[in-house]
Image (cartoon, rainbow, N blue to C red):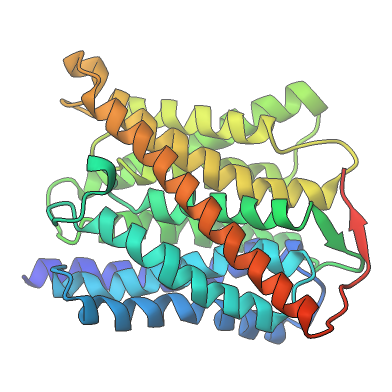
Length: 359
């Protein structure tokens, strides 16, 4: 129990550090404001995730271990911050983004997180039982699909105006913080200090490195230039890809998952002459594609139980269908939430900001 509590505490600390590191790393996607205001607005968008988890789960009587509750509340905060990045970039007011965060926390985060972290519960939508160690389905697949929903409803329109500028030294520090805290979260997500901790850290680091290799390789082939954003894109894609199966991959299979995730995310993200569009596509593609690749590849590469080890397709099917179900549910629910908020805003006479359509 002491080890379980320590691991859970590591998870909470890791997610808090991850939140602030992501605020810095993704700041260039947001309209230019003071750093203090940026952090406060990001906190306002994140809080509903933690509050919803803390209030709803006890009320529903869900049989999760008590030691898991603080970490999953913190994870909810990180997810709600991430899912509102596109809405804030699209010119939405802080109030609309916070309300969307509240709806999303209740309607998307809580049900998907319960299904992810209560594997032996009675709730089995569509009879699916996915393997997901670090919450990739909710943290990446659901978040990416929900970001895509906002972009689709907004028709890829972005407000005019300056964006936050991230100095290179601060960007490097933010990237290091993201990698370090993500690895700590994967350790904490085990909710026990056992003999797989070393493997989790190794697989996470290997996948991040090969995510960078995959991203940089594709960008060099297609565009002949790389930058700090390339390292950030590849590293985050690799970490996302390994999240579902950090204790179940080997270093070789973690490298494969990271390499594919980084290469695919880059191929669908980087376009010439569209820097802001590239950043928003990165948010969607790295999370949605990276998470999907990681979850599905686990069904193929999981040590001892994946398709390559058993020749059986059951786990691959469960992982693939879970990705489809999660992405579809999150996309539809988020589209409805965001569209309704837009209708309500139009109904009270709000005017939209001037927009610039991205290519």
